[in-house]
Length: 352
Image: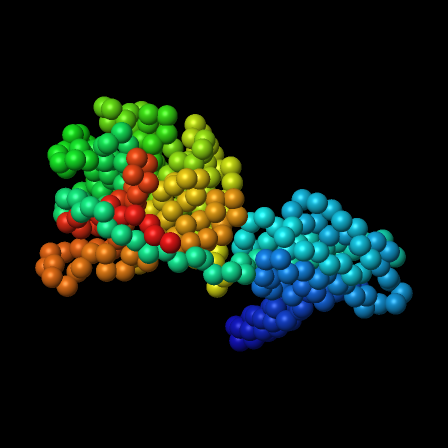
C-alpha cells in the first residue's frame, strides 16, 4: 500500500513540474527588421503643421525595397522619409496612419500609428442679451426642446416620469402630451418630414411619432447611449455624451458619418442637447451653462456662448438641475434656453 502511495505522489510531482515548465515557456517574439521612428504613437499635431514619417532599417542584410503610407484612403509611395500637411485631414481628432514596408527577404512589415489633430485657434467668445422670459413647467426634466410653427415640442426624462409634449409658445398651454413607457428614459428629440424622432438614454432604442397625433409610427436602434438629437439637411444628428457626433440616415437610422468635437485644448466631451442654426451645430455641455458652436464638417468648435448665471439659482428654493434645452427661433434669429425643472425659458440674442 505504501508503495502505491509513493508512486502516486511521484506521478503528481512529475505532472506539476511539467506544468510549471510549460507555464514558463516564452513564445518567441516575431523579429522586426525595421521600425517607425516618426510619428510617435498618439502624437498631437496642430492643424496646418506637417506630419513627418520616418522608417529605419535595423538589419543590413534585410533592407527596405519599398515603403508606402495610407492616409485617409490614399496610398502614397515614399523612400524612408515622408512629410505631409495635417490639412490632409478635414476632421479633427484621432487619425490613423498605416505604414507598410516591403523588405529584401520578401517579408512585409506594417505599423499603424495614431495621431491627434488639434485646432490652432481658440473658439470665438460670444455674449448674449435676454429678449424675453417665458414660463416653463417646473415638473419638466427637459431633454429636448424644439420650436416648430410657433409650437414648443419638448421631451422630459426620468424613468417612470418621461413624456413628450407640445405647448403653445405664446401662453404655455399644453396642446398634447403622451406618457412614455416606464422602462424608458426619454432623451433628445428632433423633427424630420413631419415626424418626431425621440431617443432614450440607455435602452439603445428610439421612437418615431406622428407630429400631429403623437401616434407611435416606428422604432429604431443604435449602439450607444442616446443624448441629444437634431436635423441637419437630410440627416439626423445625434450625440451620446462623448466627444462624438453621429450623422444618421433618417429612414434607416444607419450611421453615415461621425465627427469628433475638438477645441484648441483637445477633445470636448459631454456633448448633450443639439440644435441646428444656419448650418452650424449648437450644443450644450452637460453640467455647464455653456453652448458651443460647431462646424459639422470638421468637428471644430468655432464659438462659445457663456450662459453662466442666466438663471439666478440663489433666490430659488425649489429643486432644479442643469441647463438643457436649446430651441432656435428662426423668425427672430434667436435662441430659447431652459433647463431641467427650471421655472423659466429665456429667449436670447447672441452678441459678438
